[in-house]
Image (cartoon, rainbow, N blue to C red):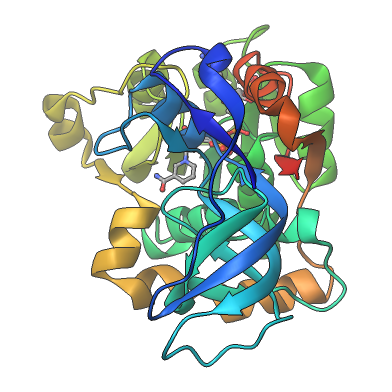
Length: 322
Ligand SMILES: NC(=O)c1ccc[n+]([C@@H]2O[C@H](COP(=O)([O-])OP(=O)(O)OC[C@H]3O[C@@H](n4cnc5c(N)ncnc54)[C@H](OP(=O)(O)O)[C@@H]3O)[C@@H](O)[C@H]2O)c1
């Protein structure tokens, strides 16, 4: 079968379309004929070799697939032909991938495979960071960085649906237009204005919650935008640098920073992580939430797809279609 391997740590040119044996499901697993593979920023961090505990090359990239079950291992209560979406450890950029039966979610009625491939990682991350980790309530204000990105578009919709006031940042007017259409109340182009100053113009004391998937200097600057007793959820470092929040600023401001990692939390506390699935599925089915499909690439174009995201040209979810 065709699969895209990361052949060495490095830039997108290390992604190569290769022929590899079709995988066989073991006990508790299914094989999925992949109809769409979600691309996540984590795939890029892993390819660069900047991901704690990430796979060693050569490996088939991709942690999220949507498709049809075409083979079932022992002890699995699933059938061939089921339309499913799965978070897989690796191996998603391929014609077939192996999924742990416990991680399978049904593709909601009326949802395309491309949309389904944009659902679990980014919507669960957005929901968990806002609610389970961030404790957002309807009378609060949340600052969402990269508001037009994959997690960002999910977070703007979920926070807005929960009744919170949403302030979003992005690097272009076009991205901010996307965020505004999804429910962002205040849209800040941080290339043109200082996001901290603008937050203080728009709020009495600052925001109650920050979703920080950027890291680097954005993290410490976001502390300036955070009200006393405010919370920040740190869930990524798209800037390429981890954030380094100074503890003295936390203690004197009664502010807190908490880390979130979907995969690790799903292993340790599956109910805390997956508990939002029924609610999210319902909100996606009734149209309250929508996966924002940004761009679809062919499997063979995986390197272009990575560059597209790294060059910050993407909005919403980017998927590969085998
Ligand atoms: N912890 C977890 O379990 C978990 C799960 C999912 C995602 N994440 C993290 O969440 C973040 C967002 O992931 P995503 O897949 O939804 O990606 P994304 O937001 O669609 O893409 C990344 C965005 O980050 C912004 N950005 C700022 N500085 C950047 C830089 N130097 N290079 C590239 N982009 C930069 C860009 O938006 P602007 O152009 O608007 O600045 C870009 O579009 C990532 O840090 C990812 O690792 C973490």
